[in-house]
Image (tube, rainbow over all chains, first blue to last red; front, side, top):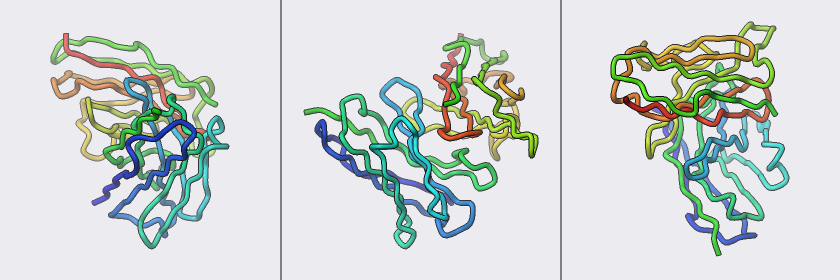
Length: 121
Length: 113
């Protein structure tokens, strides 16, 4: 079955760069139509779509954060990495990675448990 | 960006009664080429990641109880929970996947009255 798990630091300082890794199983990013996305959720707030990478290395970013985000994939390791530069306290959130449904791109049918990242000095 | 607005922000429903959640998009999410609405609904229980309930506005995800149904087209959508159960207490989000960036509604909290 499909599983995803996020990993990375739980605490970062303002201005630092956050690097999060999504390690998945049950599917391959070599297969046509497959995508993995990142979504975040500040405590008690709504979901915010950040970025999505497809099997063919097509990448999509949130325009409001595009200058700070980079999404990459390592198909041999079954991993997707998200970097966020210049972190700020407002970036404090639970960060989720999720599998994009093949027949309905952008719809997330499997999610990781999420990792809470706190930005504080 | 397409703005997704849900209503109400919260509602309390008696067990066994119907809960209705609305979602309105700032522009149509209907693809005329395939006549599909790129609108999904998720359920998020406390301390858990979101769970996909409905996609293409009305297609129920495998394993989702049939008391959950989605309807609507264009800019106006509804998630209906028939015969509310205790385990349905959660926050529900709509999401448009019509155009990048994908955007979510602010969420609707469903509680038991």
